Image 1: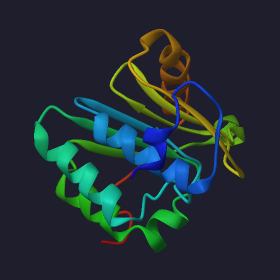
Image 2: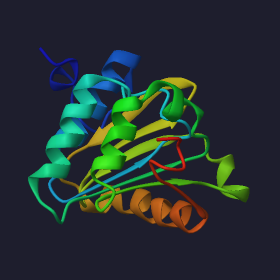
Image 3: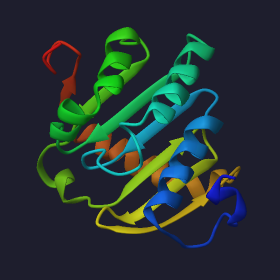
Length: 165
């Protein structure tokens, strides 16, 4: 049984396994747009087969679907996430990975936004404390605004070629 299904949304939740399960839950719920900010993708199971399969299903479900990832450092991506890089190569038309620059690199939380109303927010990357909420556009709006700000501060766009593939 999925650990997150036993926990109530909109409360502080602890634990890396719960965080990975919540990440998978949010990715699985996305129907049109998936926006991920994580300083390096080192937590959340982004290197896993499960996340790969969920992202692949999302990207193949509709040609209009979009996945945007913003990060500070691509080292974990290039060394531990070959499946994610393969998806970037295969779905370059629908998938964007950007690196932050300047003051934006001070951000040390992480979040996943699925469409307009679902979010998962890890308060600090070094601590497995997070909160998620489903179908709440009002609660998700500040994170969408932050994502836009981080995106404006991200001038380097990665491609499968720039990652060495």
